[in-house]
Length: 112
Image (cartoon, rainbow, N blue to C red; front, side, top):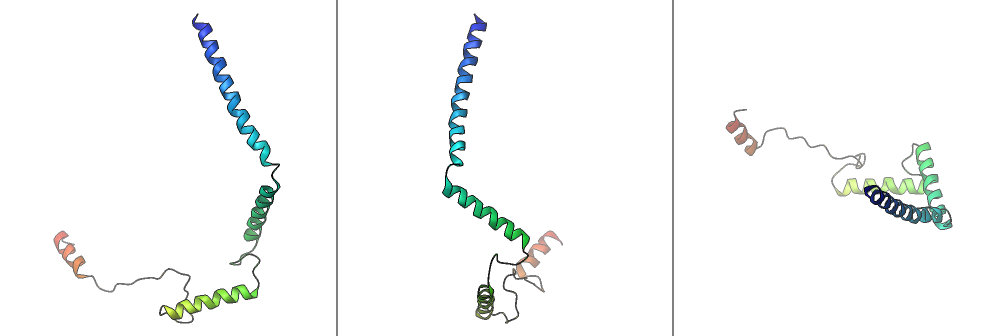
């Protein structure tokens, strides 16, 4: 009796798994049939290969694009107080020569 119940339960689970796998396999089989999606994936792979092969900042950029990028960086440097030679692509480095008042109080409390 118990064996019959176990076999029935196993058969139900197998049927459920077969239905799930069939549903997933239909989507996977359809993926190769969609030409637009395949074209998109091909372009992404092509871009990935180009970006790995070149050490330049932009992929397939001509001189006008790199010149425009440099001009925009110089414009940002002048607008925000940097010089023409400042590297505006780096995060700024802050230097605090003395301790602030609050930090001094904290150090006195902790006896630094």
